[in-house]
Amino acid sequence: MPLFFGGYDFILYLLAVVLMFGAQMKVQSAYSRYSRMPANTRYTGRDVAQLILSRQGIHDVSVEAVAGQLSDHYDPRTKKVRLSEGIYGSNSIAAISVAAHEVGHAIQHHQGYGFLALRNMILPAAVVAGNLGWIVLIFGFLLNIQSLFLAGIFMLGIIVLFQLITLPVEFDASKRALVLLVDEGIISLDERTYARSMLSAAALTYVAALASTLLQMLRFITMSRRRN
Image (cartoon, rainbow, N blue to C red):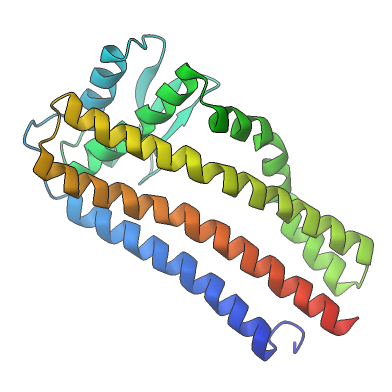
């Protein structure tokens, strides 16, 4: 037990938890606020996604609803923008902001945006690392098998690399979303401030995830060095 909850180690663990919890609270707070604020144009998330795709000349990407809250994403394999139920049929600032953001990823894919291509290339390895990395790391640490422990650290390194590459992908998609929302007359300049706040809160979760993974890696490396 002292190996897991030493003073310095506990601080690293606490920082990681606080970062993730704080980021989640911020995005939930922003979503709660802006999901109750209708946009002046009354376009729904679905309307916005289809409108932007059409005006950008992208006709091979479809828009569909998926279950869950804030489960929105763009799937480059099937070329589908998937919007959660609270986004798909809502005309709120939150809905049109998130919809435009996901369309931003579709535009990145259409234009061959470098960081998105790199992220998609690393994705299979990141999925494997995400499923096995912590298991391998913890077993290696508990059993004091250095090779297994280092394999776990390597897997977490892949996750960190994926999260790092994800940052410019997400920031660029949000930047595109804000520009398109105004240029296409979907929101006013005043509403742009609200949309930016919503997207900034969502982007913070990616920053927090990266920082949390790094802190946890440092924590286990510190514990391993102290023991050995």
